[in-house]
Amino acid sequence: MKDVVIIGSVADNPFVEDIAHHLQQRIDYSDLVSLKTFLNSEFCPRFIIDEDNLDRVGYKLEGKQVLLVSTSQNDLSRNDLAFRNCMIARAAKDNGASRVTLLEPDLFFSAQDRGPRPEHGRTLFERDATDYKKFDGQPFSAKLYADLLKTSGVDEVLTVHNHSASVKDLFSATFPGSFYNLQPSDVYASYLEDSDIVDPANMVLCAPDKGALPFVREVLGQLKNGPAPVLVIDKERTGERSVCMDISENSDIGLSDLAGKDVVVIDDMVRTGGTIVKACSLIKKANPRRIIFLVTHFYTSQEGRERLHSPVIDEIVVSNTIPQILNRDMQGRLRKKMVVLRLSRWMARYLGTVIGAKDLELKPPYYSEDMSSKNPRWRPPISRKA
Image (tube, rainbow, N blue to C red):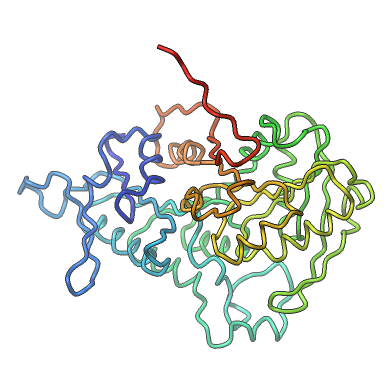
């Protein structure tokens, strides 16, 4: 991997270090790029490869691929991080890099996936005047971000479990053949079957809305021990933060059949937790044995922590696409029922294919489990006597 330079958009990001480790970069990425800010507050990244050599100034990255790993951070806004990505990509290209790849597991501005006009984003539902009005006066931010990345020098983008049809369409159009939306359905299926979080023979998978159903079916297809019934919840939004819910007629199983079952509610992201708690409250009425909430992108907030602490959810499984979820203070009281699946090894496996690391061999398991000792399922590490 001598022709690949792996860096992050901030210094000392453990997620970036994990990716670099799995891709066998031996030098610390902070020794490859300086992420400095001038006294006037302007950001100015600088690649510091072969710093003392005055030969080929401006071409030190010639023939090299740059892999930029970008994740949310507590101390910088996503706006700041997005612009850092653009500056770093331009620095790479202005110094001879042949290709710039951006790995952004939680793709920025994906929630701003449409604008105020019909041509501003494709949706899986028919937009009405109310939906257009929600975006009146706003920019089509997801499209702008894709355009900025392209203009800055990014050649390909990888993200994880992005369910927005609009975002996937526009990034595929902006980066034709070079946009990858990695789906962790295989990892989740493996965890559900190989851990003790549920009884696989007694399991029901649940889509909390129609948008989540395709991914739930992907997880279903990855199960090795046979299929599980799928429960689908119809959700009708009646206000900005209010919804009505009922069991869909497209479900494989009814509410009355859930008694004693292990129900796994699967979604791509959670912010405030209101709709998920409402969905789990509906399921709880049927007296299941356990209710597990499995979510990829977890946005930590005081409101979300308080709501998801509800007893209608027995355990929460998240990924580390937003790495601060590994912080116990960020988890708050949820640490008693939260598991974080660290997916950097799984991502590195796909990255190796994309960046052409043919000799890279990463074997399962592709995740590692991180949980607080407050979680009842926590097992202390086995002590080994010398």
